Image (cartoon, rainbow, N blue to C red; front, top):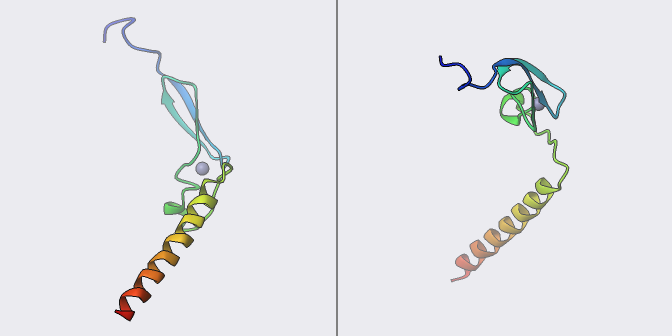
Length: 80
Ligand SMILES: [Zn+2]
């Protein structure tokens, strides 16, 4: 490897919003993430949200509206 063309490769910590810390090596000493393998619903099998911006609420509200619209469309089709 050529000198000075590569950034420093140091011991790093990946810190998740859930409190999990993963030791690795990177060019940055600290990496902050919002979700990791310890808290992602895919791995935990649980619906546990670290949502603070209300995006999940908005999504769920949209889901309710969509289901209502779908039910309405289904009943309309049956009448015809
Ligand atoms: Zn996590």
